[in-house]
Amino acid sequence: MVTMAIPIAGSSDGMPLRIQLQRVERRRKLRAFTLVLPLLLFILIAFILPIGRMMFNAIHDDALLMLMPRTTAALSAWDGKELPHENVYAALAEDLGQAWSQKTIGTIGKRINYELPGVASQITSSGRRASALSAGPYKAALIEISPIWGRHDVWSLLKRGDSAYTAYYLLRSLDYQYGHDSQIVASPPENAIFRDMLLRTLGISVAVTAMTLLLGFPVAYLLATLPPKYSNLLMIMVVLPFWTSLLVRTTAWVVLLQQHGVINEMLMGLNIISQPAQLIFNRVGTMVAMTHIQLPFTLLPIYSVMKTLSPSHVRAARSLGAGPFYAFWKVYFPQTLPGIAAGCLLTFILCLGYYITPALVGGPNDQMVGSFIAHYTNEELNWGMASALGAILLAATLLLYYVFNKLVGVDRIKMG
Image (cartoon, rainbow, N blue to C red):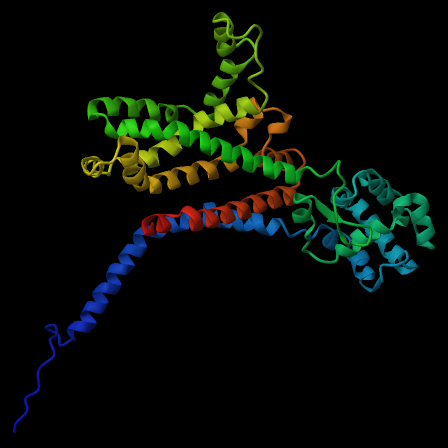
């Protein structure tokens, strides 16, 4: 029996067709990657790198390690029980004197003042007088210059400075701090403000999201069911606020809600109230302004889903005997859940970072995380605290997004 070999299909140059197809596929993927490369670079430079830097600043602080190298090195052998020995005080005197001559003593005082408020001026004066010390004993001389060098908590702080990484900022953002012996303790009640602020931020964000859903769902349904010539006109009115800036919209609410503003004057003119109501610089003004600003962000995803739904589903349910409400609730509403989930999640995440609106129309007890981050960034120049608050807000957002996806995510909606 004679067997004949079947030739493998290939190109004119003898290359197998399989290899040729693989090369064409690689070139196609390379062209696609080249097209999206500018976008990837933009996301990397403008999004990923700043977030990474923020996360790094939340745990990194090498000020004491760089500006007081002799002291931090000498404290490595300190047992933390009694005050350090004479050699540590000698290293401290040398570091303070050098910091005074190099004009970095203020940075040292600022860093220590973060954890021990009120000592910055004493550290500055200690640097000035330590630069004049020429011989020991340094321990008695430095304690005489300033009593803070006889405090155990100051030395515990300096010992923690031998590492470029610290958990202080993250702990402080959760109302914890280091104690006298570097143990983690709760912050005093008069300084414990951050947990309440985080809960306030979450509460306002949830409330605004709920109000935009209650107001936006009926409007989205109306837009999806009206004839195009009417729905297009209403859609222009919905997106009209996007044509003005956030600052202008917030300022407009200041005009409307103030004591002698349009709303109060109208209510008093209708004899609904006898004196102006307090509608601004409180939680009411904050939530009203935020709801107005965020309403399109919740409405538009819901509308986009409703627009794709066929009205024949509800008509079929009605023809089978279902009432209007039952047909809507059991047939129509479940199909809108992907849009509700997308709109609510978008609004909630945007609300977490609000700063301008609470600052203009809210009171002291209505300020959110963004206000504190702006304060530490622009006024105190405390990048560690600003980064820590931002990192905690980011972690909370990712956690809530994960839980939200598990509970009412699109995959669960489709499975249901």
